[in-house]
Image 1 (cartoon, helix red, strand yellow):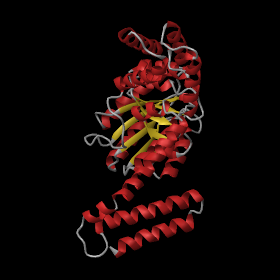
Image 2 (cartoon, rainbow, N blue to C red):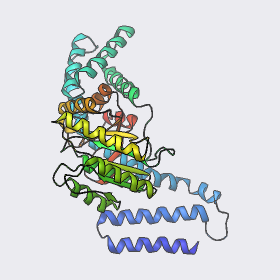
Image 3 (cartoon, rainbow, N blue to C red):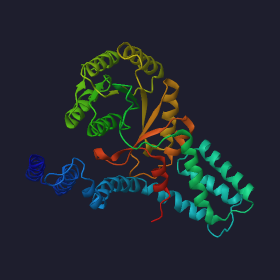
Image 4 (tube, one colour):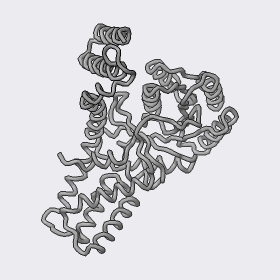
Length: 381
């Protein structure tokens, strides 16, 4: 017990001396307090049972507060990231219902325009409007004051159709090891950065991560993912620029399997302008991976830049024509009013959004949670 407390204190002092920024000092202090209470919970003070139930009950609100601190930080990041989208949607919605007391055809026409101009997409917008029309017809009378509530419910229902479960943690299927994620997307959407941030989050969750630099076509792509590997502290399997991407993928899976990796992230080239070459390249990568791990890849993740709005829709459709997309990562949602693209793309592709990017920090790549997303979008200030 004394050794554990001494080790914790040593780590705190080391962090205090070596990382002098205010943010790191605060984090070190929080970590120290958290560790102190966890040791007290498990070992208590002095000769007590392994699980000190009485101590936990006495201090349960402290533990709840510490766990809530990290949860609140995530929620604040989401709220801030969707702020411009929320302001855009509801300022337009307020103008649409100004001076009107009931939801009629004119209000629905205005709402349709609001959703389309908020990058929800035409097909998804029409679907939402039809659902609201059905409710208006059924209830006979719907006031404009109820419109926000109804819109929220219909968007939540729409997201639920493609998101059976909300992602709560960074766990992976136990029967798939290593879990292989093939990452696709055009250049400039933040694909390699997303891979680096995913590697950080998985490693933080205790996973052993391997990266594969199979984008051998773009200049500096291998160097970029290598820098992320060094930054996060995970191995990167790579070859020279111009090498066969399938060969890189093969080497990556062999190394990952031999070294007991939990998750593998493989970068690929984003040459969407030549669909035939891209399709053949991705097919070859998949075929070669199956020689090492028959089930690979477990996931084909498409990375999209949320700030591009309708361009993201077009990219999603084109990539879906090239390969089978099983999950989406939508980046750069902070600082844009185009967050509605999350709703439309998921609905039209029938593919779940798994990750969203809400800032530059590594922690700002979050697991997508449909309930939290809708809560933030409709949150009243």
